Image 1 (cartoon, rainbow, N blue to C red):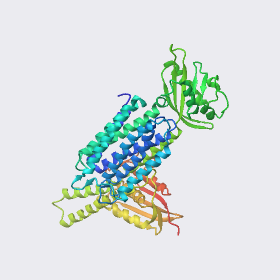
Image 2: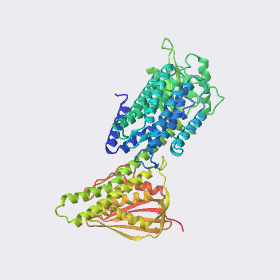
Image 3: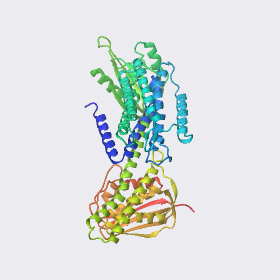
Image 4: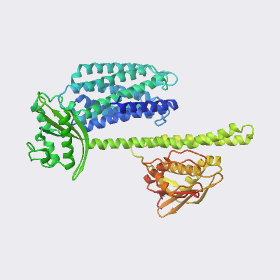
Amino acid sequence: MKANYRTIFTVGLLILIFQISAKQNFLLFHTIVELSSIVIAFAVFIVTWNTRKMLDNNYLYFVGIAYVFIGTLDLLHTITYPGMNIIPGTIFYTNQFWVATRFLEASAFIMGFWFLKRRKTLNGDITILSFCLVTTLIVLSILTWKIFPVCYIAGVGQTAFKIGAEYVIIAMLFFAGLLLYSSRISFTPTVFRFLALSLLFAVLSEFCFTLYVSIFSLPNELGHYAKLISFFLIYKANVETGFTNPTELIFKDLKDNEVKYRTLAENLPELIFRFDRAFKCLYANKALGEFLQHEREPYTGKKLSHMGFPKSFEDLLIKLLIEVKQSRVIHETNFDLKEANYAYSFSIQVIPEYGIDHHHGTYLIICHDITELKITEKRLHELNATKDKFFSIIAHDLRNPFTSLISFSEMIYKNVNRLSAEKIENFAMRMNDSARQAFTLLENLLHWSKMQTGVLKPDLEQLNAVELLNEIKYISSAIAMTKGVEINIEESSSGRILADKQMMDTVLRNILTNAIKFSYENSNIVLKAYDHQENVVFSVKDSGVGISKENIELLFRTDRNFSTTGTQHEKGTGLGLKLCREFVEISGGSIWLESEPGLGTTIYFTIPSVKN
């Protein structure tokens, strides 16, 4: 428990997210589970490709490359799922992509063993081109040529081909399991266990998909869980084990032959050197000379302190050697070297090598350059942060129309005996408007989700400032009316701006919602848009509670979550203005506010105007 608490916490959190999403909306559950497995598949490929020079196992190399194409087909399976409405058609493409992807995955598991037996290193470029060709043919056969057999019929269920294909895939996975067992000597025990369990959960996943009648049934849900676990175990085998214990993979075959060890170590890109108990250098490979920019200088016989390492790097190595000398166990750490002309990230291992008497030993140091891995990891964090922002936008923006629905429905059932038919009809019409707004917003967000994964990029188009203000006034009038707040438009610019429509709607909607939230009953809110130099300046002014100067800067800070309740104790998330700032800045504008406690607040933002 103590050693794996992070994994236990992560798994528990994922289970909670999956269960909540499954109860709320099966499409949301399916999308989250599939995106999780797709992220894992891409991570397997990224790290496998970046560590291909260290990876001496052709099977892990081949399977690692395959997963980027498996992830790509799974992405197509996700976006063609019923309800996504991204790729139109009457055929259930999602089931076809599922079968094709699982065939590709099972085939990769089997073909990998043929490459495992070859002594020659796998050619990564040819392998990628081959997978790319196969993947393209699969996509064309389903979406363009439409020659791929139908796998699901609405009202009937799975076709005979779909069920039969699942059993064929199960047989292929069992065959891969037999090959894995017969080749287990080629893997470390840990990697063998991960691969075996991954195949087992893949079989369970396929078996679940032979049982379900509806795509929303329990076997379908269980099948996705098993698939996600299978992908995670491949991740553990290809990524974590390959980095956490690299010496076990790289030097597994070198312990019996010192000459072979020296030949390989001399040509490795990692820094490899050995010290005696007095910390004198016994061996240093060629990479060390390149790193220190003294390629011809001999290091053998020099003390560590005289080898010319950067000061911070030298201090760390001495500290690690002392600790290993005292504890006699392997020490591992990561170190960022930012000194003078050096800018590296290293994964450092100090390994004690004791003789039979355990007294006269040496110390092997291996420094893996993980600079590219750090950059990749940072990129993955950025992608994950973008995903979190997107989900935050969905949660934040969907609240407004549903608040209106709740408010009007509450008015009706509390006053049903006192309301006239005309009044009820008016409320019903406004509830219908709010429902349509919610639908429109959700549809827009689904279209937005098709934007390229990574940083959010605006889809620029020419927009009329007056139309934007009128539209946001209409959308927000229902919420304002429940509070007796009147929204007026003054000094509307006749100019046009160059911006993303969805982003501008989100910015104005969030700012106006905040203005209503902090306005007193029966007060006014003024919307303006006027030309200033090469921009159009938008402003939203309320006469509400205002905000103190010391709290103004907290509203836009991403490292703080500042939120206060409204005049009727309305709660907020603290995300609205942060999202507004990011969307305004990514659109080439700026945002600021002016406020006095008790006198109200005015929020301004600029957007570049269209040049005549």
